[in-house]
Image 1 (cartoon, one colour):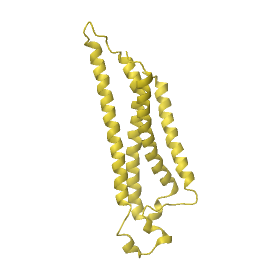
Image 2 (image 1 turned 90 degrees about the vertical axis):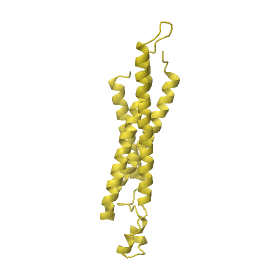
Image 3 (image 1 turned 135 degrees about the horizontal axis):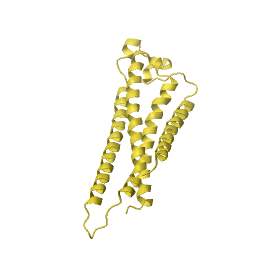
Image 4 (image 1 turned 45 degrees about the horizontal axis):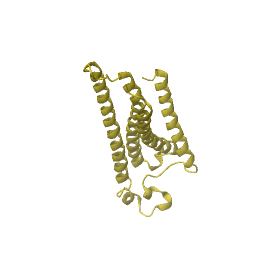
Length: 185
């Protein structure tokens, strides 16, 4: 199994991914101090009076879709973690209950093969849960004050969402690489 230093290194790499995503979204949003989740709140596009303008929100269906996509990825990552842990449990049981003619499975090599994918998938779940919570909370605040969705909040929300997606992909890339290059005895 990778050492504690390797796992800390993966945690640091994951934090760097979030930081880079934040910086990217912060940089591409230069020139705006705040963002409108609903297009009709933009002062340049005010065609309706304020009370009528609040009736037809067009971000709520998008909010639901964003949360549904994040929930799907969290579900897939959690299911993958369940399958991985079940396989480690199977390998542990199989290594103890082997017939004399069968070669036992080396539990250490199984753990080594699954360590990096598990860490990436855990970070994926962590970031996407925070993405869903923060996006919903910021939208609730936005409904009370449209100028509350500022550039740092925009960069944080999108950075968490994209980092969660990237960690999910990296988890399966790491799984593929570990299956190709780790010899399970």
